[in-house]
Each structure stands twice: as C-alpha cells, then as structure tokens.
Image 1 (cartoon, rainbow, N blue to C red):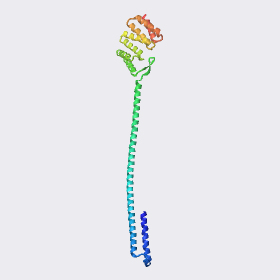
Image 2 (image 1 turned 180 degrees about the vertical axis):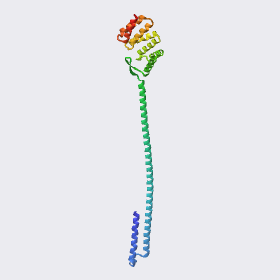
Image 3 (image 1 turned 120 degrees about the vertical axis):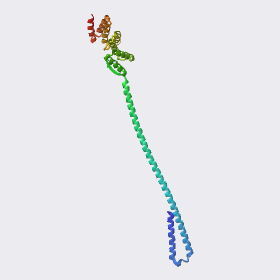
Image 4 (image 1 turned 180 degrees about the horizontal axis):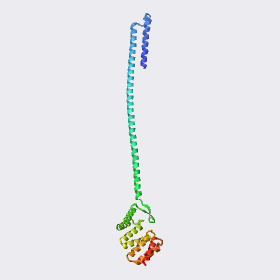
Length: 265
C-alpha cells in the first residue's frame, strides 16, 4: 500500500513539473533544454513503472498469501467441522452404549433379585416349621410332615398293613421327630387291626414308657389291655386297666377301663 501511495505521489510530481515547464515557456529554455527534459520525464516514468510493477507484485503476493491463508483456513474449518461431527457421533454412540449398559444392569439386578427371592422362598419351604400336634409344639421338616400325613391318610383309608410299614419307616428316618409318640400309637393301632397283638402291645407300652405325658398315653394303655385280653392274659389285662385308672383318672380312657374291668370280674 505504501508503494502505491509513493508511486502516485511521484506521478503527480512529474505531471506538475511538466506543467510548470509548459507554463514557463521560452523564458525557461535557458534552464532546461529539451533533451534533458525528455530524459527526466523518461526516468520519472521508468521509476513510476518500476514502482507500479513492484506494487502490483506485492499486491499479487499479498492476494496469493491471503488466498492461501483463506484456503488453509477453510480446510482447517472443514477439518474442525468434521472432527466436531465425529465427536458428536462418538458421543451419541457412547450415550447409546451407556443407556444399553444401564438397561442391562437394571435387567440383571432385577433377575438377581427375582432369583434371590425364589431361592429364599424355596429355602423357607424347606426350613423346619413349628407346629402344634396332639397337645405338643415342635419343629418339623417339610418332608417329615408330608411323610407322617401320608402314613396317617393310609391308616384312615383302612390299609393297615401299608400304614404300619409307612409309620415304621418314618420312625427310622426321623428318629428324633416330635411325631414319634403319635407314630408309635398308630403303628400299634394298625397291628391291633391286623390282629398282631404282640407287636401292638409292644408299641403301646413303648409309647407310655417314653412319653407318659402324651395325650395318647391313656389310649395306649387301654389298647394295651385290650391286646393282653385278646391274648387271653386276663391278669395282665386287669393290671393294665388298673394302671390306667390310677395314672390318668380323669381321662375318658380311664372311664372305659373302669367299665371294662367290671366286665372282667
């Protein structure tokens, strides 16, 4: 820009000098001859052309530089835009992955919770439960209660031989069961029903010896006396009936024993 201003200034100076020469006329002929004036003008024109060429060259260089800078800037902007688009795409993909992972995690936690709940329910079903049976409270396992109920159901159907086998197996598998006194009573009852009086009296006597305070003990003594009477052991039968009335005087079995004893005399 300075070169162009300088060139314009020199051009104006040259034109002014030429105008002054023309105005001065013949009176100035003594100072400058025509040849010198032409050389001065030519020199001035050459300088102006040189300055204009330099100015144009610099202007072209500046324009090219500006064009290169603009092109580089555009390329940089395009690259930046592409990077931003790629970043947005990566962010969107990552958000999708995070959302999917969060969903998967929630599903996994829900499944784990359901599994834990299911296991707890199953374990709760397998855990011993407290029951009240024939005047006693005790804990029983699920299988234990199921097997006892099944044996008792068979007895009530009248299949005494099968019931006896089921109760006998029950006592073997559940040696410390709270059902033991009841199981002994029903084994003896099944044996009495099948006329196995010796076997029956052994189980009735075992019940009374092991659990004298059991609700079935008075009935067991009455059944024991009946077994002895069936075996024609009247003396033992009377003794057992007397034992029943003495040990459990307020029981219904004691009243039945009193009537039975009266018939035996």
